[in-house]
Image 1 (tube, rainbow, N blue to C red):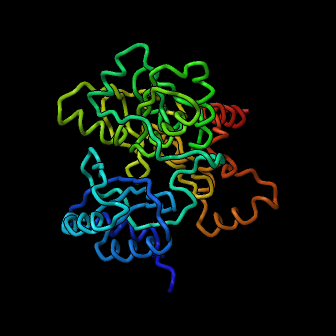
Image 2: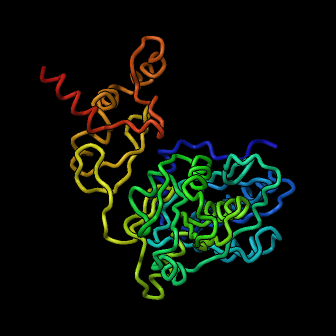
Image 3: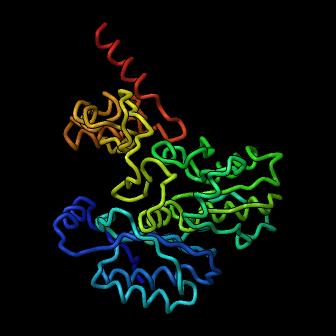
Length: 356
């Protein structure tokens, strides 16, 4: 069988999505399940969902499925019927995006992974199914109001930077596998305390709750459906939102606003801002926060070096990338998230050099 994948240029796909008149629903879901043949399931889902013009990013593994998707409303009933007809996914909770804009993905990507959430856990005695207790939005609010409750954010630093719950411990980490030992270390000596955890859609804090129980913590809870479901319940039940700011999401929207609070600042000028962007230089693509003024001034780039590269003809940009290691030219593609370059300092240094 030929590889089931969409190889159309992303710019073409994005243009098509922009002109599309279909009404779509943006949803996310996950389930830990014992999937015997992930590759076979992946191909079955790709064929079905392609026919229904579904888009999204889906991971399938022996331990289950993790999906963020855009589904046309005209095929919604067929989509739900098919999910419920599969024993793995029957009656699975689906979280729908708050903003209601279905134009969140432009193509369908389904990948087979070793795990749906990379955790770095090597202990063969760990059982991910022995999870902590679920909390709905009202229960989470009640728990967070208790000053003796410990609140843990199981997301990456760039997610918690723009939005988080009151009093949350936010690990300064780039990946879930980094966070787990950091959280355990933070909680040492507090094994009997009440712990409540949260993440974007629930999949990370669910596994983390099982890991904490495995490590001897007795009173572990996690937010069912994550921030996505919490925001929905807060709106429907007219509850106070203890989550402030923007919920970072992994699609074309980048974030969906939960409250008007702005908790972060532009990485270039320091003004209040919570808009994540990727550097316009394709050889860099650094994720950072940029205000509208800096976006115009820097042409969507993170530094003046990247601005220069973007200004070159495409062929010269390609040649630059091809030769950047050989000729010793420094390129910002070496910056991974864990290096976190200080853009304000880099720009200040460049301005000083240019004025010299």
